[in-house]
Image (tube, rainbow over all chains, first blue to last red; front, side, top):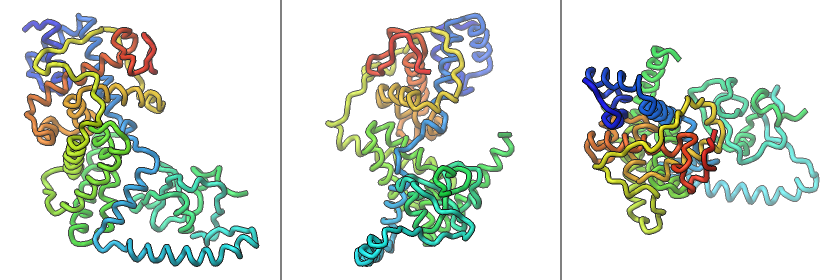
Length: 179
Length: 218
């Protein structure tokens, strides 16, 4: 079997899907070996598939995960949103009442850390998304190799991680560690 | 990663997923985010590919995830959960697009006749592009712009097959078209993207893509 350029182009996508019969496949390979143009088309198409197929092409906007998680939690049946709303209001009232006292002392203490050995962070962007594990003590950048217990991870804003007592990872969050 | 390790990993992932789904159905609703978390990038990408607008894509992605929760009992274990989730997302995005069609920007390549043959326009040798170039935001941006310039029927097929890695049959089912149409559209989408992105192509660079004539984005 002999094929020309047009026939190769028509089947080139199926060829890459391994969806052509062996006879046609052999004929296409024979043609492509001797044809610079078809060889360029094949290489280019392979590049397209490889580049777009990479996970990095699936990036989400900043804060997407956090907003999605919040939306999911708010819409769960029996969501404690109402109760939480009340709690937030109550907490806000307490904060307002205590605000003057904090301002007077002009010292902002960190929440109690989960580990007595950990050091609190400084200057961590509050909206930065970080990864924590339920039983862990530190928060990490996504993909940090020092994350323990990868089965129970959550992605939350750094502000919340600090509020829950997580401290910066000494490796991936080193720049935020206080001296 | 060796193939064996990969398949063990995906088998373990599937097992975890089945367990999670069972527990969610049994009332542990707070586990639902854990279930969809690995796929949130894919859900967003599917919505964005159809809507080409970040705000709409995010809203639709959230709606699709909530819909998946609402209908979790209808999920059949013979399908992959990720495929089912993407199908819901595509449906949601298409409904949104229909609703807001008047506000959508017209794609620059929508006049192509699907039945006619599409021939490559240039045969510049495109040497292997290292995947590391994807670390560069401007490269990802150029790829996204090229994709957004395709007509929607090509874009949808390409995104589901080559970015979401659905099979030809799953892509056909999701879009409600025949596998033969998927193959035809996929061929054209791949050829068009190659033409748009192949370096040194000169005249084929669209000014809308803002590539300088004859230069490479990498």
